[in-house]
Image (cartoon, rainbow, N blue to C red; front, side, top):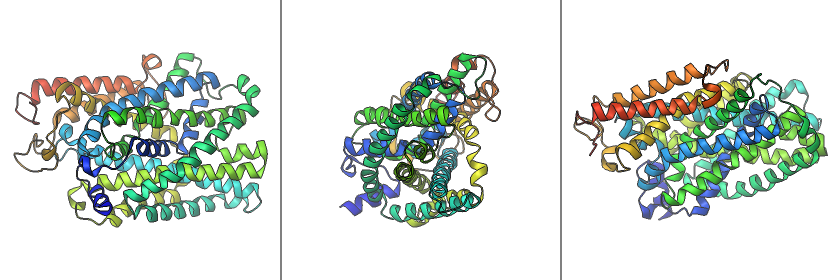
Length: 464
């Protein structure tokens, strides 16, 4: 029965109540392990550019809660109720061909997230090796490449077991992530409390409002980026109501709490890597303990990301009958390529990567929220989601829903107007409202208006 359930989960077909074996506890464990990736330190680092410790903590928590609320409203109602992943849940909005846009967004974002994890882990290993005198600084890039390759091989091996491998690994990694993460936070706050009280950000704007809103913006888009992972995880939940609290706490609160470590370390020690600053606090032994945490915080999200990507790729018609091994390879080979060939170049673009997540996923979440709560009342034609061709419920026009693409474009240009994702130059009223929230609002309004006055009168989209 268990192997049958695993094959159903890997097929990408909707999960019935009898197919779901996860308890609320298991859901909480997987969500927490997924959220507590090494990217948390980088998120804290970028907030430390603009805010001091007190304001940075406030911005991290506020932005994360806002982003997690948007993500929960967008994904949980459909994924947990109908047992479908984020990709399948997007077909009613984008059409039975247009939903391929969300496959691309999932694929690109998870490659980005996982590549960041690999490079960060490789850098931590290299730093530990240099500290212990095992390698010279000139070989650090070689270490990063080697670690990326080995980690990808481990992820591939674990996920050959499919959902069972993800469950088992998450249960083990949970204790490492929670235990050592809490210890690191305590060590940094207790040892550097005085320095934190007086530490100043390194690149603040003259406007405190701009600095704070930018910290909030970074946190919001960090959580929205989990759209690519989220549906595949919460579809295993017993019910939508049982998913909300674990989502908001295990994912929405754990990420900013861990980001505080990166924020504090960057403000005081000018480095977010815990292996580097813990060595300065307690010597090589502390650094090795931190390295164990970084390894756990790398492996958990990597497993969830590759698993989610494989499930999403399954919905692509050309890959519908591909083997599970092939799907895993397609999900992990691009990540390994980034880690081997362009680790430094990609790692230095983290801020731009976050902003581009906001550009695409803020409008996407808004469209799904508007469709679920204002237009469909969370009633979907589940058979229609898996039907293609002429006359099917979500055909719209030639498989594309123009309302969704128009709304995406409106949100995209709203975001670009407010915030340049490359230079972080902004326009009024960004410093009061962020860029992602107006982009989401504009997308939602455009989608609702276009649907009510164009799509529904045309009899398209299976709206009642």
